[in-house]
Length: 383
Image (cartoon, rainbow, N blue to C red; front, side, top):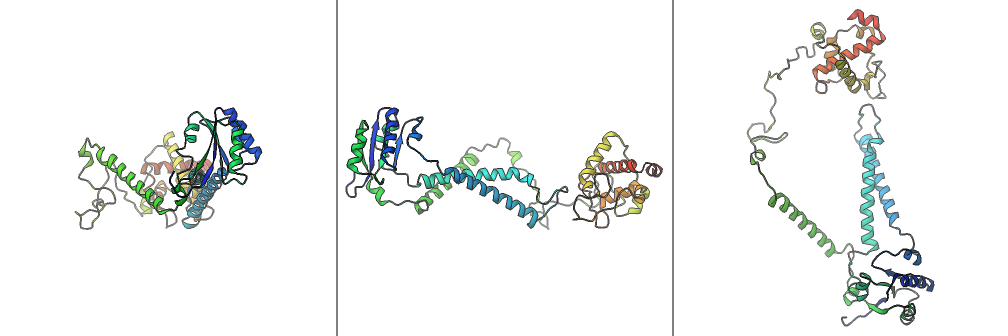
């Protein structure tokens, strides 16, 4: 013990079996002591009841933090999709909350777990101050092995050095001793915001990151096929020093035709498409299934599932005409193909990028099936 300031922390008492510890804990509570703790090398059934321990508030921290995380996520999702950048996806409402349930759960767990650990370390355990008067004492070494003990702190209102010592001795303790603070513990005042503590955390984080990067990405990195790692190619959206415009991605040469595809000759030529284009597919079961799938995916939000113009977009886009009116029932297949491919008068967009060519014709067969169901005579006559 260093000379100078000498301040009593408390008095400890060692017992040789758990039954004596339980009896001692009951006696300490009955005597009226509040600032004390029991120590054992393993959990003892009934010790918490004997000590009259109150329910911990750490669960409240977890609950509040978890609800805070869930609330922030819901507000963020609502504001993003409904206010800042509203999007209608498949006719669903702007705030389709079921899709955010997994994210809300994750944020609840994340906020709850991190806040619980932080509060436990910073508030209940008082870190980063990791020194304690009981550390390195014979009492602590004993209760960490095969002993059982009680420590009553001097800050207790009922504490009196002489009386408390005699009280513990009368409980049948094997050994009772006084524990003092070390001089450095009385002069140090570490807190969570202590510059030294924060600097240490930053240094440890940087060193750990650097060691992990060098170890895993440099020292232990093995490149068995270097030819696959270094190639004469450019990545999408990267800059090129070879071409004058600086773009690595090049547009197709003018007049290029994809293999197996003939150029579409009637772009924006509705009359030509109506006159010369015919459906090259047969209405097989597979074609009809593909047509139904694509119609329900791309067309039904505006046209309705049965092409009755019963839009699900709640008036956010112009409602198209029913596909069962006379002019559309008798219209040739080429008209439908041209409209699907290039859109119509700025109201209907082009689906050339979303729907392959054969699937556009499959959609047309499915439209004919819907029309046949409601207008059997007219469609049969038109065809």
